[in-house]
Image (cartoon, rainbow, N blue to C red; front, side):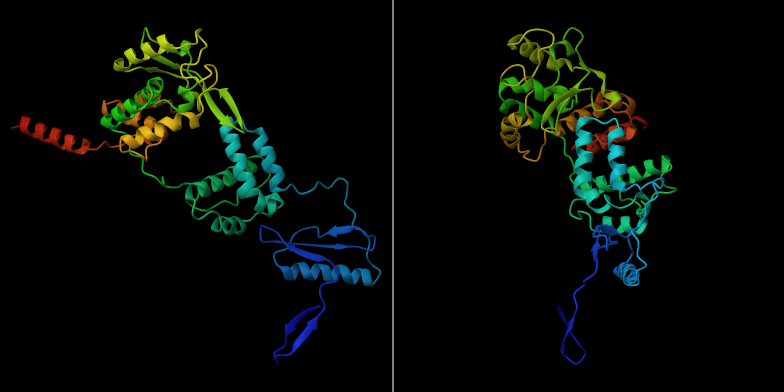
Length: 381
């Protein structure tokens, strides 16, 4: 029995629900179910907008049982079951040609942030209002994750429209898939690079210098082998990358098609690289340039961080991430006057927008530009 209070302040007992059950789904809709005279559980053929609607359906079913008019619902064999978002999303992910890290990232977002709300909901039942309610409660303190989750949901629904599963997508929140960079990246200066390099053990210095001056990704640099380093012509052949996903180390093509590239090595790095190759214990064209201590495995990020963190602190840059060295290399290249197309080729980017993210105004550069403008003005007098 459940007690409620009447308008006179008296405790009134009302019977607890004896027939059927109603549950609220993560989408905000309601599902009704009951056990029929055949002792089997029967669900409503659809979900409801409100609890009141679900109550009304259960009341009708109870009335049919009382009148002897009830019969087990018959599902036509030819009538297909409504495809749920979860079923379609799994199919969507399975059909995508993704890099291991991207697949792992999408899987994590689906499992943690999307499927708990939309997984059991029929694809056609997801409305713009439901999406808007979901987004309003989605990780407000993590804007990047929020944008990624919305973008993934929108992409899946866009594909569903292309597949003619839907006539239109329910994702219409302007700007929800984009976010401002939460952290402004400050590339390392040349003096900071010098301190960091000097603070590292000798065997790690060439790795840092390649990432900084050639703007290599960590996975590209740590998968480099002797055959990829052309010391005669001063070129690095970037053909592969290594990533860690799902607890495994995987070697594959670079992050994008444009990532397969040849990168010219600044001449001042050549003596260091030649000395490093000469000192390598492992021989053969397939030997890793920067292996783990066993000489054959890929170096783990955690191993590198143990020496990099103290080195960056010594340079007064405890905020500097290893990936920021790539930004440093892009900035240095931009300062030489390289065009956007040249930067795209050097960085391995397929779109100008991606390459533009790595261009930064170095400290003091604006003053140099102002001084150059004055020299132009002086020359005209």
